[in-house]
Length: 54
Image: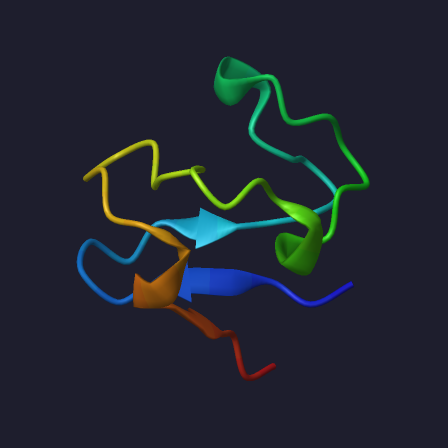
């Protein structure tokens, strides 16, 4: 699964880890995150994330 990086603070959403503090289990793809999910560091929405080029 593809990782996504926040364009504001550079925090990376890794689907293998999820976002446990927000109740997002490992294995949840970025596309499947709730629409109201926000970056756990700076609070911006999904629209401010870009795919990580590996």
